[in-house]
Length: 258
Ligand code: G3H
Image (cartoon, rainbow, N blue to C red; front, side, top):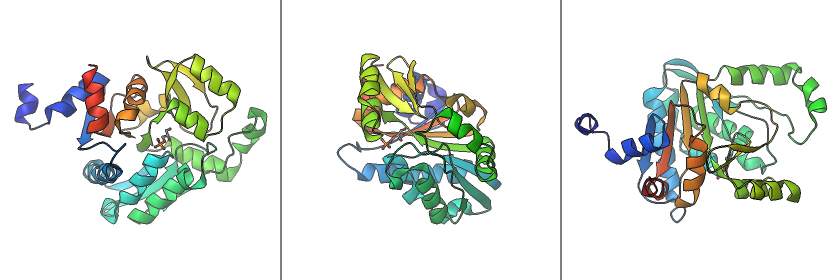
């Protein structure tokens, strides 16, 4: 509209935010599916945006894992920690991912890049509820879970359902169930179909999507034409205040159907 034109908000970003029903979208040029550098530009944009938005003083930043998040971590800079005390905590326990892309590793890298601090969460995911319930009472685990609950910033990615299920070695039975229920997206251990319905949940420890409503700054980082469907599906569940950082590959594909 005229107002956003006057204020200089790029139209495409505004349109995509409206289509997805969230407050903020930032788009970098290119498509990370064919140009991996695009993810680095997204990381630089994330760093800049955090530097503008985050309040002075203490910030507790809960970060998720994944290959996208691993690139984001490398692009954060010490400028972010100017007048701020940054504490990075993994938003959830491990998910059977390779060590390098687990949330614990991402938090450690983010702390290293910015000069902030980090905490780790050591709770295996593939154990029964009966086994992990007492773990939650362990002081070293409980203190990290309390910090996660106090996070004022969450940074996460969105995955394609089948890619995530295979990468996390989910059983053939569950993969079959995901296919049958037409899962297209995964975030925070929840799998969604195209309409945004949760069709499967990995029972996990830590932050869940409903908790995001209380978090002032939520960043969803996902890009590439191949992720367009997953982004749209997850966004049915995203809190309003979400900032999506994406690329033209995903954005153009999302706007085409709109
Ligand atoms: O939950 C989403 C995944 O962590 C995204 O992983 O960035 O490797 O696609 P990815």
